[in-house]
Image 1 (tube, helix red, strand yellow):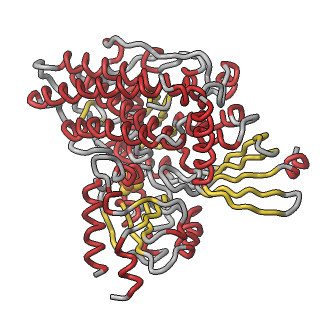
Image 2 (image 1 turned 30 degrees about the vertical axis):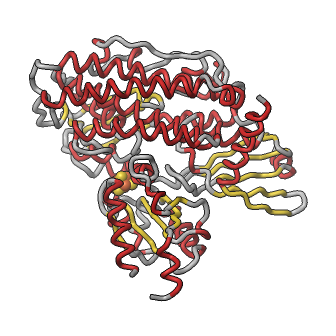
Image 3 (image 1 turned 60 degrees about the horizontal axis):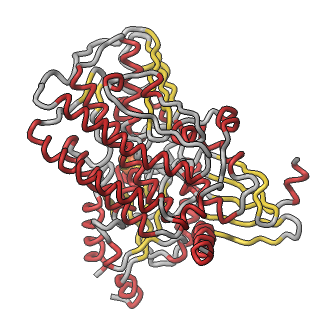
Length: 400
Length: 138
Ligand code: SF4
């Protein structure tokens, strides 16, 4: 295999990226335009979080895990609090459970909108990018109303939430939500009914059920291939058992279906938020339980983050800090699916396939094409990859 | 004011790079481009290569694996180039200060012109920072 690889053209992607998210490194082994193998190298974003967590107080860890990822900045505290509460056997007041769900679902909407925008950007549909990011702003406004910050909300606390949703904020929240629904419907139709996007994305980067099972992929990636795993249904926590929502799945597992799943999931999230607001409006009640000591023991917490299952394990020896804190984020299992989805595809499609999984993909900064055979080295940067992707879209546009 | 600075001030091209951040600063930088904040109307835009950049935005703690790469990117930029440290992470290390992977903060590695603190700084704060930067360049 090593011999084989030497003959191929290697396209390294990364570790730096012009747009956002973590630096990561991919090497594409190409035969002409066709990708025959992919390698992944991580570590550019390692920040020693598990180790740092062992040196912090239980309450401080909530803020530390929040800073694992800026897009899922609620998922990690959610899973962490679930883990500690699992250890304690503590129960959370009902109002706090609903508030947790509201924050979690708002985050799902903002994360999916962000994805839609970037996917549009990579395909050369900058209008989609601008739309999606424009509609994302009201969601961030809601966060600002509820928590006081656009990102990194610091809402979670072991045993409850740190801030209440005030009654006088409710009308404003509902108004934003209502406006958002109309805008999202427009965006969803615009994206899903577009013949060019259909032609560009259908059948690209297909992941079958087998692939999903073999790689253990989770979240929208798995649901797009017809595997309906969702922690909110499978292992209900917070207020999810009391709420009525559907798990969206699709059939084909290509990038288009991943977009469908994400777009439709946003409407389910709006449903959940509306139900939660109904449930807490005018009821009052506690938002936290007092928790003093954490006894020795182990706990497991899970949360369905926008990208899939987020898993936290903690171990306590009775002191005021965890002795072990293990974190597994969903992208960790989703990223290796590139091995299946990229192989056999063309280089112009790679940008969108990498994006389709919604990992930390913009890692795709500097791309150099090495031709080991004739010692020729050609530098591609990420903009070149995006450019190729856009040219292909243009071509399809003309054909249709 | 030298000619170079005068030219630099006209329309700032920005190269953004993350050295082990949590993405949030990076997303807020992108949010500056969305229709609400729209800094492109001031002629600022993100570029894909450090060689085109007038401004280098740096986020994250710059972990040990990134240290060499950050220096490399700075070396590649055309001078004069303004370096902006965005977020608590690149200003001081923030919550990750004591970690074993801490390679920064940024000003230990390359000269930094302005610091925009916050975790993450709001797009308004970033725009205010850039305005101050333009004042400073005058
Ligand atoms: S300063 Fe805060 S928001 Fe910015 S990268 Fe660091 S942890 Fe994330």
